[in-house]
Image (cartoon, rainbow, N blue to C red; front, side, top):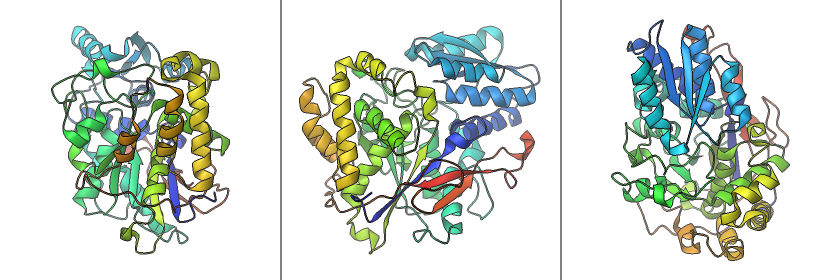
Length: 437
């Protein structure tokens, strides 16, 4: 990866978890909260609104304690995700994307069940956020990342400069942000947001707390991430995203994120929608921040996530016919192919794919809502809206996805486990990889 000689980008491979996604740990934490607080008993039916991954993980958790699980999912869900939910004994009800929360609550009320509501309740799942600033393994992502980086003798930078992730419910990135702020960890928490999501404005400008972004939303979006069609962003009600713990936000075009998925796959890392967005966001930081005085001569180190496997999206975001049809209003394959080229060129040359893509790919489609000026400022820090971008002098090392196997560099690994109450000890379970990309 000649373009970024001074940068390490580490992907934490959450697709290696028991149920195949980042949501495994979240679902365990939600289940623990609900059981301990008496929300779920032996005869409770659990309902959840989900794009698929959380539903599959919660179905698994419910199967462990012998309760019924019903998922309310978008009618655009991939068939493979439905099969995954059903493989753990869950049932599925399909509704329009923006109606999931309403329908899940209605079903729970009508049938005397419990609506888990991952969008509202991540702050109640205390173990998901809090592990204590100790050396013991835990369920908190940042705790695990730091432990793995400390344990890797070849990893010179022990605390990442940036943690990058997208947001669907907002629970994951908020848990990482809480942990960093509580223990004074210097890692900047960076939200990568989808094209038509309102989270960027919510975090950076405090907007959409009382108004919906539904009129701004354009399908298909990026499955499982972004927010806009389900009403106003109300923390603890419709979303778990805590703006106070996010340091900066970066807006990424949906076709750029989709292109990022393909670029990762060509490099041997097959991931889903979040992985594509996380890659593009991380490359933007690599291109603009690797000369920061903050580094003091050290390598810029960015940690991000690979939340779920790419094969979930073989018939959608990896399918060229699907892309042309569903992203036709975005410019279709012409714009998509342009973004693929710009991202690959960025990796080779160290350029900023967001700026080069805005300059070249947006010109191919006159209706793109994201301007070059927005992209140029999209990475601003909330503390300094006038933050200047650094010159493009960074680099990147590629690692193959897979537990403990690196292609070109060293690898650190983090915990992938079920807690003791689910018949498996974190201390004895196989780790989930943290990959140097």
